[in-house]
Length: 326
Image (tube, rainbow, N blue to C red; front, side, top):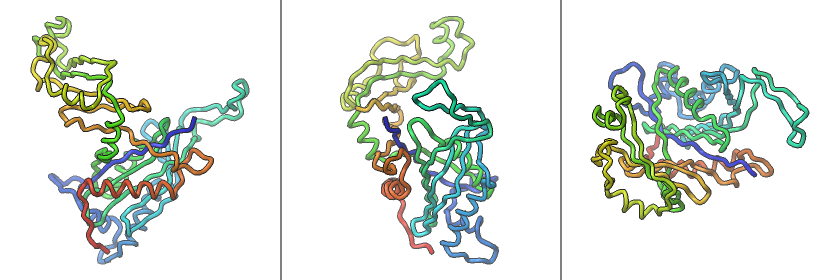
C-alpha cells in the first residue's frame, strides 16, 4: 500500500517585535532591514540569496530539534526565485531521541541494525516559502505523509528564525476554496455535535450536584451514524434543537455550537462549525503522480510545479495584486 503525500498550507504575516499595535510589514521592508547593509541599495536577487543562505546558517550545521528532543530536521537544499518571490527546497527530518531496532519485514526474530538515541531516521519533505516584496501576506507550504509530518516543528523553527531578525510571525491555516468544495461534494455528513462551553451553576446542579463547583464544564450531545448529504444537512441545521435540553444548557441556539463531521468516499474526515459558516479545513492530499518513479518520495521538479499552481490559486484568494519591484 503506497504512502499518501499531503500538503500543509498557511498564510502568514510579519510584525516588528516589541512595538505596540505594530502593523504588518511588507516583505521588502523585512528583507532590507534584515539582509541589507547600511547605505546599501541591494537588488532583489541578492536579498533573496542572502535570505536563503541565512536560513541555512540558522541551523548551525546541525539538526534542529523540537522542544522534547523527539524529532529533528535540517535543510541545505534551498532554491531561491526572486522573480517568483519564493524559496523552496527539501527538508530531511524525522524521529530521534530513542533507540530503535531495525528488522527485515520477513524476519521479526533477528535485529538487522540499531539506531541510537542521538541518530535520526529521516524522510524528505518539500517546502516553499513565498514572500512577495510588495505584499504583507506570505504563504508557507510543507509536504508531509499521512503517517509522518514535521509541520509543527518547522513552523516553530521559522518563528525562531524571524524572531532572530526582530520580527514576529503570525500564521493561519489555508485550504483553497475549490478543494474545500470538492471535498464537500464528495462527502456525507456522518455526525452532528451540539456543544456548550461553560455551563451556569443551575445547569451544573441539574446535571449532578457534584458538578456545581466545576465552572469550566463542557457538554456535548453527539448524533452519529448519520448519512446526510451536505445539502440536506444545510436545511437541517437552519433549525435549532427541537428537543427539550434545558438542563444541559442547550435551550437557545446562540448558547451552543453546532459542529458537522464530514466523511468523503475515501474515508477522510473533517469537521466544520456552523458559527464559522461551515467553513471546512480538510487534509489537503497530493496526487501520487508527484512521486519519483519507483519511490514514495516527492519529485522535486514535479512537486515544485504543482505547488506553483496551488500558490497562484492562493494568491487570487488572498487578493494579491503584484507590482513591479526590483
